[in-house]
Amino acid sequence: MAEKVVLYSYFRSSASWRVRIALAMKDVKYEYKAVHLIKDGGEQNSEEYKKLNPMGLVPSLEIDGHLLTQSLPIIEYLEEKYAQPALLPNDAYGKAQVRALSEVVNSALERMLKKTAGTYCYGDTVTMADLCLVPQIYNANRFKVDMTQFPIINRIHEKLVELPAFVAADPARQPDTPEDMRKN
Image (cartoon, rainbow, N blue to C red; front, side, top):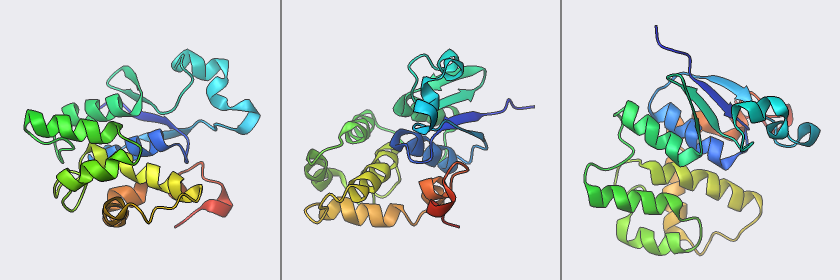
């Protein structure tokens, strides 16, 4: 029997969102444990959570008897363990490009995408970079950043948010989402 996978997450955490998308893309079933980042001074700061993750950050993922932290290393672990669908290209250069795209969170991304984008950030296959893009755009929109200067980012984002894995991982569909913010 496979060990239970447990994701410690907060519905609106960008880093947790990336991992939820990866889990959905890889069709990995998991138990969701909410870690409220605001209530009672932030549950991530509790002694109980810090015993689990001393850094006091989300996400944390219990899998295969290990506790993983930091969204990109978690995604890379899932990529190694569950090969399909691949979130990294097969070639070393392509992997380096996707990893670089995944790390970039400012306007340099639009310039990089001019060289790498197809339907998604790197060609026509969803990659780790796309998992990072959607939460960033959500927060940019949430804080009323003018996104009209980023047409490639916007085009890619519109395609991604229609995909089932991205819909399932949306903050408005998580168990700890406040009722007034929920989507069905």
